[in-house]
Length: 133
Figure: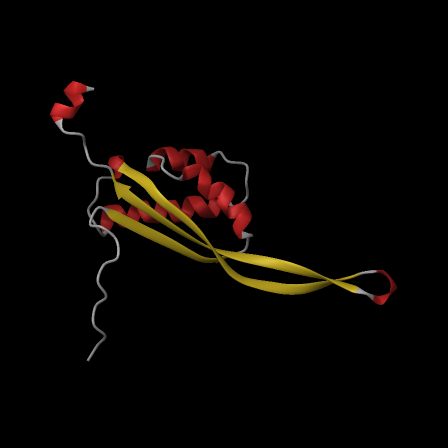
């Protein structure tokens, strides 16, 4: 006896990759995720490769994993993939303290984040629409 299969939540032309508990605040991670939303997958990889932000390396790994999932698990065309979603979520917060003067302490919060990237295969325009454009 096994558990029943869950129905697929994504469309047939979509694939995703999720990274949990990334040691960066959601606010900073969302800046990098916003750079790649809506872009072609190959353009997004190129932009993350040359980004100066430290977290861009982790986002790039997650994006490459989503692209590999699309190619190997769902047989999608890699050249037509677009980053349809890049969701950032809040994970746990480690609470530490910082010793201050006169025996006091102040709190330090170390934030963690979740990242979910969904890539979708872009449909080719019909020939009649291309002629009109």
